[in-house]
Amino acid sequence: MSEQTLATLRRGYDAYNRGDPSVMLKVAEDLATPDVEWGATGAFPGVGRLYRGPEAMREWMEVIRSEWEQFEVSLDEVLHDGDELLVVAELLRGRGRGSGVEVEMHVFSAYWFEGAKIRRRAAFTDREEALEAAGLLE
Image 1 (cartoon, rainbow, N blue to C red):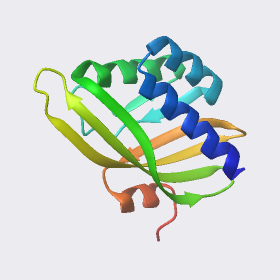
Image 2 (cartoon, one colour):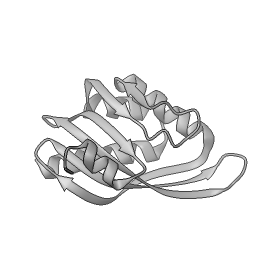
Image 3 (cartoon, one colour):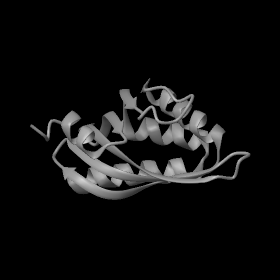
C-alpha cells in the first residue's frame, strides 16, 4: 500500500503546486473520499482548521493562494508509512502577495486512507503532535 499512498500524496502536491483550482477540485475528487476531512494547522490567518469534502479542499487552496504570490508544498520526509496511515513532514515555501517576503516552514501531516483515497488529514506545526494524533506516541 505504501507506494500507492505516496503516489496519491505526490499527485496531490503536483496539483496544488500548479495552482489551478479546477485542477485541484478534479484531483481532490479523484484522490479523496467524498466525505474527506481536511485539517489545516491554523498557522495561516484566514485559513480554517477543518474543511469537509473535495469542494472544501478547493476552497482551502484558494484561501491560501489568495495570500501568496507563490506557494508550493513538497514531501520532505516520511515519518510513518503504514497500510492506511501515512505521516509526513511537508516543506512549504511561499512569497507573500504584496510584501514579497519569502517564507519556508515545515508542516507535519497525518493522512488516513480508505483504500487508495485520502479519508482524513490532520496537520500540525509540531512533529510530536502529528505522531501523537496518529496514535504513534504513547
